Image (cartoon, rainbow, N blue to C red):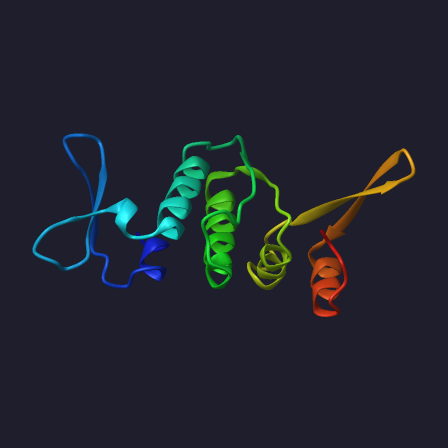
Length: 147
């Protein structure tokens, strides 16, 4: 709820209907289906539930930015990092989005053990280049390519 309220501050509850659809209470006379609330809320809830359901495990998220407006990427990262810490989950997320990496660099705190790996190709050889939180932040701040 705390995470989703950042998308929709009027949200007061989530309810599962008889046909297994998630509905939202946003103060109207009737509940609103979650999918009417926007892709950002749907995607964020799905990722949050996946992390919470994987206690002491691993979660893989392909193209983490899908369905999110660039201005919401920080909300997603904050949710992922906080839940990963809370449930002891290692998260692997892919992206081609510079905005997603910028939001990651600007989100979280020193407790979060963040690593970004960029795959470089030279001729027929591939090399993984690692960025920790500090190097990612400096690279993004200087508009360096980190994807």
